[in-house]
Image (cartoon, rainbow over all chains, first blue to last red; front, top):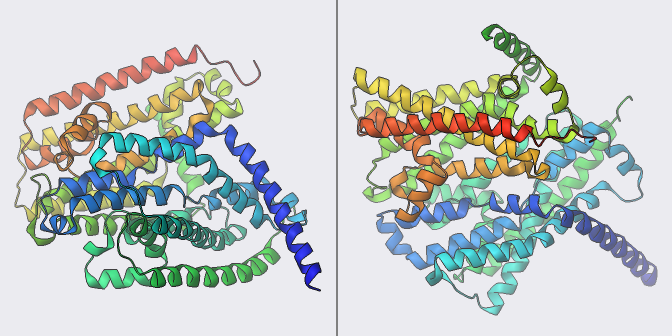
Length: 270
Length: 259
């Protein structure tokens, strides 16, 4: 019995791996585009410039060095948690490309996941080059995170990507009901910008708003990994519980919504 | 010519109005974005600090001008200029060039989206709140200055965007350069003097955020000298002329989809 399951699991992971490598080959063709996407994620660095320029007692309290490390970490986290599934999903749906995908013996979900993961792989050298540029401009902000915080940070970034991806995937299902559902993505972007710690470290937030932010998944997918990477004292237990909890919750919701929405699907001409 | 533009706009508004749900999405995202920006400003101004010599309500004026630019982006720039790349990719630019109308005009003003309206209203409200809280009474001269500065900031944004979109005649794949532009534009939500000196130079001459939001706000407050207004006018008009020349130059390199 166990061997059958293991065999199935092995087969499945082989499929995922070949999907991933084909998507990776595709993504490599679009290096120029991906570089531009990477450049468009500069917001944390703009915020860094603003925060360091302000005559604010809070800034002294937070220490300039910490701010620099925090925002550079936030920049890295943002690069590897980019999610655009709603836009491609809507496009595929409108062009009728979704129908053949649905006929394949594997759910389209994995196609989108692997394309995102492949894009992240393509990004690695681009982000390294950008980091070299950043550190050559502000050399004294350079730091090396300890091995443990680096490992935990990478795991946290991966989990954060999954949480954000699942969140967007659930809202993709709206495409079955309206042909401009990707507009919802703009709404999802707002709490991501202002509650995740992308524009300001969460420590500067007033208590009430901090509490509200921690009800949403956003601080876990941005502030937590960024603080980990910047070498701050963070509660690993709380952060990872938040990430894993949201992952399980969103994963179960996504399975249910997919089952409901797919029944609603009628291809072009049906 | 105005007649043609009027007809263009009437038809595109009619087709946009099919998507009524978008009004709700647009308004929610507008409120969310403004609330978020004000919240960020509030974080900066905690405990009576100051941002590059600007107080809170003066910064609101900058946010207001930024929101006006957003309105222009949503209404005209985005619906039109993001299509240029698609025309080049699909080869439909041929049809545009064959039309008996200036191609740059057609590409820039063919469509209008009514969803910029909420942003426009919000921008005007923010500017008025900022002005009245600072007890600023605008004189005639300031009004002329401010309108000139805002108009030149509109022309400036259009010209930059159009020049970037034109480059896709050579590099079809850089369509998302628009995203880079939009994401850098976010820096214009805050006063120029809040940035470190090295960035200030970049934001004035390379990527002129200074002329997009800070100078119009200064014109409203009355702290901007007339040379700044004149400079932004000259800057925007010359960039506009460059965009026209650049488009003509780029068209020489345009070989349609099959050739």
